[in-house]
Amino acid sequence: MQFRCETSGFMNGERSYEVIVTDDGNDESAKAMIADRFSWAAWTRGPRRGPAANRNHGAQTAHGEWVVFIDDDCLADPNWLVEISKHAILRKADVVEGRTVIPDKRDNPFLHVVENETGNCYWSCNLAVRRTRFIQIGGFDELFLQAGGEDMEFAWRIKQQGLAAVFEPKAVVLHPQRRFSVKSFLKRVPLLKWSLLYYQRTGQAPANGSSAARIASAVVCRHLMFLVRETWHTLSCRVISGWRTRWFNICWGWLVLPVQLPHLLWWEFQFRRSSSALFRHRSDAQ
Image 1 (cartoon, rainbow, N blue to C red):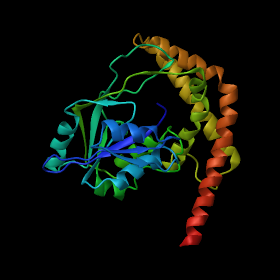
Image 2: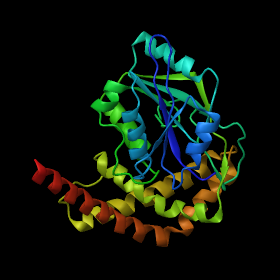
Image 3: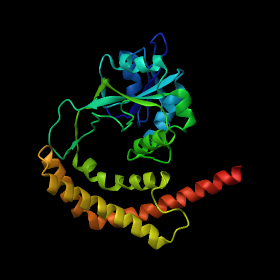
Image 4: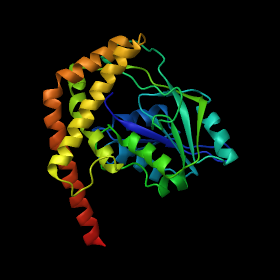
């Protein structure tokens, strides 16, 4: 079945919750499946503007004090909401982050890997946020039109705003590995462009108005330093666990460098032009 969705719910003192599937796919096959097999869940059409906007849509549709996110390729432990609700009831936290586990972990560079065993990631595949705080920090940034940095940017704002966050290792979500097709594997190269938007939105890139040379050199240096740092770390630490995937990714990064750098430079200035245009539009509206 080809569809993408996010799920959000809420809890209160009575541990009640609702499940909302906001479906961002191109067909409505999920709608029929949910109506047939999960009549207690609500289906809603997503805005089709990427995962950030889709999650915000689910949060806006929900009614509870807390909003809980999980991705469509994950499986929650039966006690997942119970463990999260313990912190919600105590009212000492604004954010509850669960543990994301790979049940069938293998060392294969052609498998999609998402794992969070120790916290401090705040990935939306296993995350609960108090509704008032979610609204306060603006939800997910909808400038991210694809999955590739919107979680990191949201996590950055959680930390910057000083929200009270707790990691609950008993709130487990299983995230099975998914095999890349040749097409999806090659798509990872252009997806790196969203890291540029992340650096811009979090103030880690040269400010608007900087010279083109300074902006370009920052992009090139940051990407080269990342590759050098990863290569050196792997060589010096002699990492045994996951060494096939690590070495493949390093070699692949150096191999596609002549294509990757021009692509990143082009998108760096595209994002800057789009942001400037959006700022002017909002200023005119005010």
